[in-house]
Length: 329
Ligand code: ADP
Ligand code: MG
Image 1 (cartoon, rainbow, N blue to C red):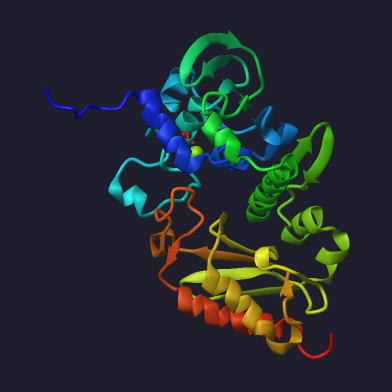
Image 2: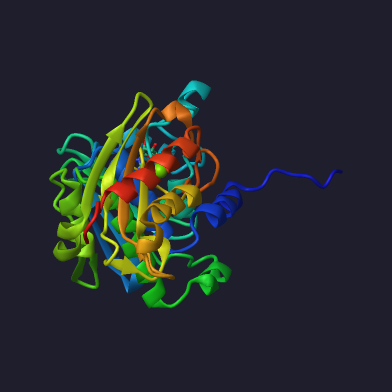
């Protein structure tokens, strides 16, 4: 008798969760991305104990059809791509179809969803097992509540840092998702207190104000440029408004927050000697590119991407950040 066997589905989901769901902020990221993909215009995120006790995401998106609710929580199930052509033209934030299955495998999860605003479904899962499914009522959209994260994977819970650190990571994710989607109103409430609240009126500068404050936003310099392959626009702080690390340089590519060392560096290089040593600007750069020129399938959490035109965009960013504060400061 051989020794090789297929892993039970709960176990393979937990392994997948190990890659995608590292901490409460990963749950927030995945669920909010789903709300964005569902065309929500309002996303309310309510968090208790930095997400360890509970994370609730309430959206007014298209909802999940009653028949799809159980399927959505199976691994590798998605409504977003079907063919290899879709895979290389991804227009949504999700496409791997593993977030819901992964999150449900390491938490107690309740979903209430409606596609018509009349009938709704409420389903409860614990460690991926469907405990209960019943009809319910709610307006069109979806609410997903995740409680007792990592209750069944204590080793993972050990890697969760202080509540303060975990909350910061959640705020950071919500900030970046909000900057990528000024057309959506995001509200983050922690222990009853408003932490982030963006207007959703499509104005990036007002969204930046909702995140970094009005004073900073109003002093930032706007730029815009494009050629036949891409559009690039955003805001740079003046060299006298700086931070001690580069994490305030936000890069958004087709509405997706990305990390890209070369592009962040290009922004910094444009400031040249105007930046003091060890200081970094605040910048929000929004790049629009034909999806086929981007390979987002590089990293499971999809923050690192490959760009066909990276060098070209970098040169442009250096130029724009140089131009943004012409002579006097
Ligand atoms: P992916 O986002 O990669 O498709 P997920 O596991 O995150 O995979 O979600 C599975 C499917 O569940 C999605 O493709 C979508 O059809 C549906 N879904 C998840 N969250 C929502 C939501 N908030 N509103 C509407 N549909 C959703
Ligand atoms: Mg998803």
